[in-house]
Length: 451
Image (cartoon, rainbow, N blue to C red):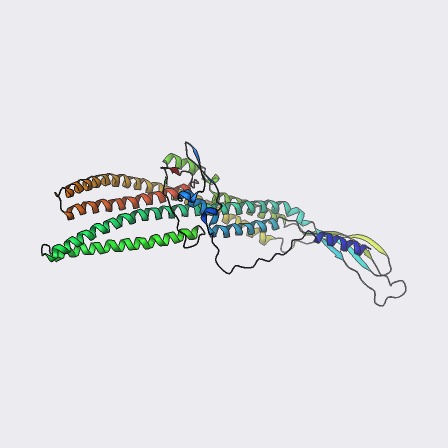
């Protein structure tokens, strides 16, 4: 009867167990067939004066915020990172569970017993590791910190993808704008080359002069082709970052910009960066988890205690009630190795955290100086751009009035285009460094506003 009762209890316990579901691997790539059906998060972006909400709407083209939202929702590496975070949280959950008790069923059938010794001897008991209760509090707190660290690590990965998507978006838009100017410059040089070839046939121009322009024309054509190839590669990289098929053609609309980050704003954010950046918060949780592991290792120095209740019956049908107690003797091991490992690991995490903070301050200082110089360069280039644009407009009027030849006017226009390209590349570098600076001080995407 007792055996039936025990078997019934075991059956009831097994009914709460997980079941197996098969999940076969795919045999072909799978991409979203329509970006309009993608589910992306609504990003909230704030400035000092107002808070704005950008909702994903690809019908009017994709701006930088919508591309960033797509990256967070559909980036393949983030999907894997979320799976890794799930595994880490599951492992932390497992580590924080109490061990199960042990049920002992030990029947002993007699083989050749004599009179009065033919009863079935047996032993039934429940045993438990009491030491697990001593260390469980530290293990539970460590597991909780580990779970929080997994979430923060994932958030930091999302921030990194946001930054990468923004920078790639700006690079593509900048290169496409520069590509149009290169095409115009190539067209101007082609017209000059054709005019010089006609003059050469009439012997009105020397061969050395035409050769120089022809070489310049070929070089600009090469620059244009190189930029087209680079832009194609960047668009494929963007599709890959967004988890889209390689053939997807995205309509990018660069209608947002970043305002300037003042030095006061940077310093204010830097002072509270340890409470803002997910990677620093993750390191803090990792340090807390390791600190609890150290406490658990210290508590584990105490003797291991196993205790249980047992009911016995011998072959003479005599029954006994008793208990079973076992205590380890901490003579040689005493968990000293695990304590030393836990202390060394905590020191390692402490140093990593300090180095990360030092690195942030150093990088912010460098980027702050770089952006200051870049702003000065943009200002000077803008003034030069205004002068060259004025000369180009005057040259066009003079050329239309036949007061200037084609070569002289074309040279003015080429100078203007070259300065535009130089200015655009410098502004792109300034935007990239501003994005990096925003990330460093813990403000990703927070300063994007409409132009």
